Image (cartoon, rainbow, N blue to C red; front, side, top):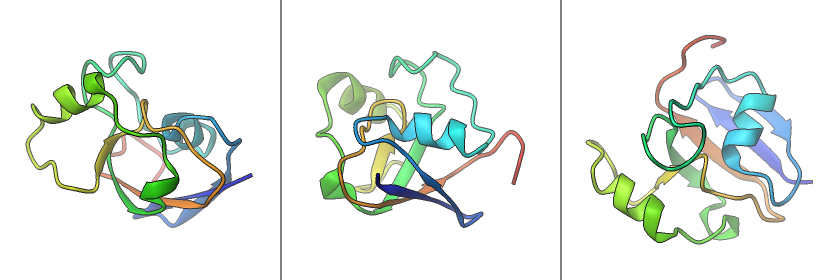
Length: 101
């Protein structure tokens, strides 16, 4: 099982391969609350992937289109609800927390 490291808090969680990064964030109690229910429609789960980007699922059209509309997007940007974990460990930075950190 890959380890998901969540910055800036430095929390880690073991997450099943094939799960979304959002699943891992929720399991770790990151306090993130996606407004669209994980359907790539709101970008409230925008994250930066610092390590392990190549192990994540490839970005799909819906996610790419939504990210094009988000201020502050960079080459490390993903939507946690769309990025699925592979076999390798991943480190992400969550930009806003509603609670917990």
